[in-house]
Image (cartoon, rainbow, N blue to C red; front, top):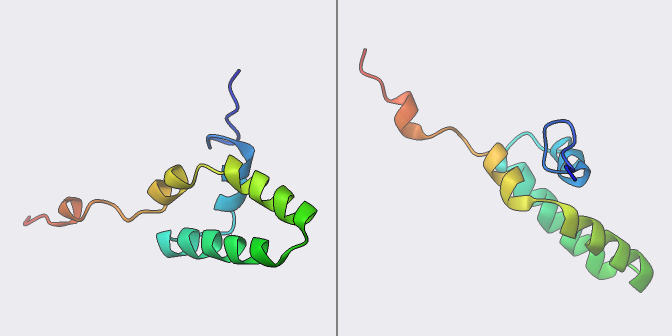
Length: 76
C-alpha cells in the first residue's frame, strides 16, 4: 500500500512541512516538539511522540536543505 500524501512520504511528514520554510525551521520544529512532549501528561506525551515517529525527519530535512553550492558556482 502506498502511503504518499500530496507528494510527501506520508501525511505527518507533509503536515510538518507546512510549518517549515528552511532547514533551520525543520530542526527548530523537531526540537520544540521534543521539548513540549517532556512537559505533557503521559497520555498526551505518548500521542505526540507517536505522531512524531511517523514524520520522516530525514526526508523533511533533505527537502528543505539548500541546493548544492557547486550548482551556483558558474563562471559564465
